[in-house]
Amino acid sequence: MPDSSHSAMDVETHSRSLAKALSWRACALVITAIVALFLSESVIVALSIALSDSLIKIGAYYLHERAWAGIRFGRKREDDDPTKVAS
Image (tube, rainbow, N blue to C red):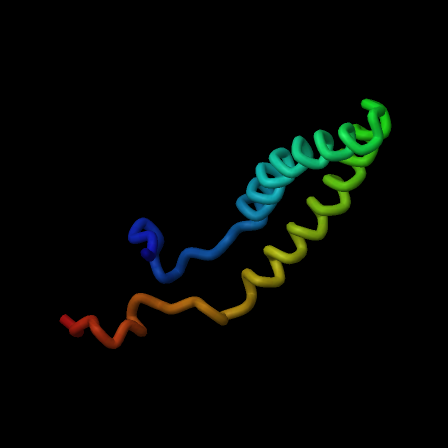
């Protein structure tokens, strides 16, 4: 279901993309740390793996988001809706 709070002109800002990347990576960091701790049985190794993984993936996710922000695929303007009657 489309979010009606957004206008046809809304675009993702750089700060929003970064906030989304950071919030997701916080969740993923915890999961990675738990798995790494289970496998390595070392807190230092687990934290090293989780932190390095997160730093790399934050950058990759941010670049991915910015690339998709410029792609029209899957976007539709409200005024392109053929079911709407012009007033």
